[in-house]
Image 1: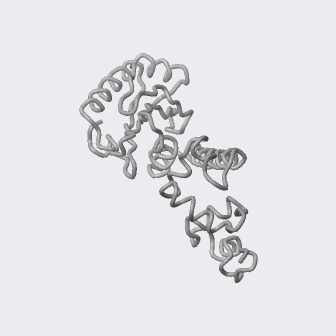
Image 2: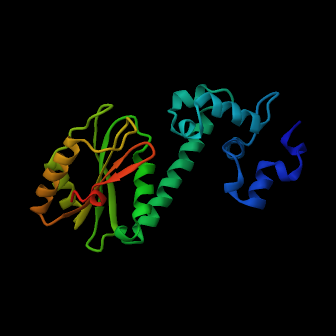
Length: 224
């Protein structure tokens, strides 16, 4: 039976309009994105098969082009469309940060940084550069490492802060292992960067470590 032959209340699009997107399952949301199924398989059934194949919605969204396009029912056009949707989501989160003092929007800051770094397969060290009212100037990815390490050079961090006339920064990096607990090296690096930035009157407001489902804040731990 085609989806168009389902009762109206069970069709994903109609269900979304009537109850909102939060009422839909992962498969129903993915089916709306797919729009159509394949021969002998409606969009919802195809969505369920894809979720099982990838191991869930998050893994599907994080798949690279080759992994994504090899899946039955997907392809380059769908991959491009998905990347555009994900980038719009990241830009939406960035716009929300740019309007406000980040210190009054800690959850928005975490959501934005999680969206940027959580699913990266390599360790990435980045800066959220802020003006004197603690509003976002820009987000910079400075260093990309291997699976479990990144070389971070204080002079490059200082240079970036000066270039963008930052008054404060939030340091951030991900742990591809998924475990957000900071290491001794993370704490030592934070101390070095705080000292280097202090010489040019740029304050380090926080250092956030992004894990799989958790984000650790140095400020909340009392380490800054």
